[in-house]
Amino acid sequence: MRCPYCGYRESKVVDSRPADEGSSIRRRRECLKCESRFTTYETVESLPMVVIKKDGSRQSFDRGKVLRGIQRSCEKRPVSVAEMERMTSEIEQEIQNSLEREISTETIGEKVMEKLKTADEVAYVRFASVYRQFKDINTFMSELNKLLQEK
Image (cartoon, rainbow, N blue to C red):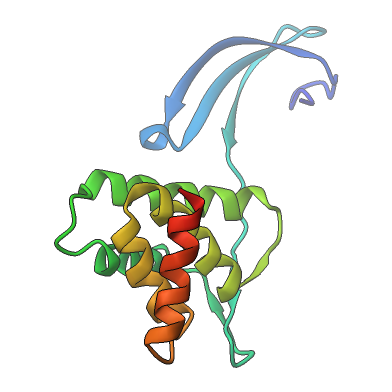
């Protein structure tokens, strides 16, 4: 970090504390050359994510849509709201960590199914039936058979 007073590139951190309700860190620094003190703020850079839909259109990533899909699948199932929130947060974090700024709905759907499969098998099958657009009972049964074989 360059000193704003003398331009020297080396400084030491004197104090660190959370700022902006924990969304950034405030650091007091001291220049190792002129000994002047100055404040810096460190924040996480969050780049906007764009979702590519099946029809090729693009829209901003909406965490709420992922959560609503999980909630619909888990309706009347023994999955807590906290668990659904955790799954949604993990999916969002995985997408952010991928460093890809554009992600397909297929990729998001696969991540949701992966989380639901471990949380509740009935919720998984519900989501898969809508996501994979099961055409008839045979398609539905083949997915159930795959699930049973994995056990």
